[in-house]
Length: 172
Image (cartoon, rainbow, N blue to C red; front, side, top):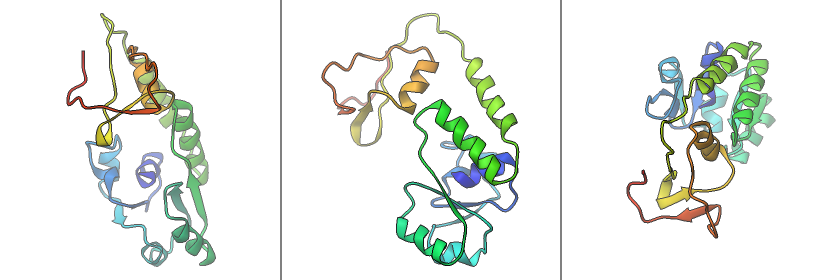
């Protein structure tokens, strides 16, 4: 997805390392910008052949791949996952700085979108139903999204951070 953000900031020649999710409208807000981005599978050999000036990676990128790229003389910058809107702003600004671009307009557009969220006419109870039947609970980006939408989340009582659920549809 970092290639998608790079394209949004204005970086020509961005490459999406991984499965190309950045080009899928269902999961990426930058799908239109990422449509022309080359996709590879993140192997060190594939990346090295591209002779990039900069490799942008997540903390989930295999460390052996990143170490090899560094030993081959490539500049590698890692990004931690975003757990809040502030994390999104920070990573976007950092991406802009690394690419020599001003990400201020992109961040301002993000903040304007958040500001446009209207208060619901009635309270909404919501639970985020995630992979493998787990519901998100506690602090993090999913909770920040619900808070921004002025949703009320059920009080977790004794739930762990991720509680297994058996519900197929979670809406009230």
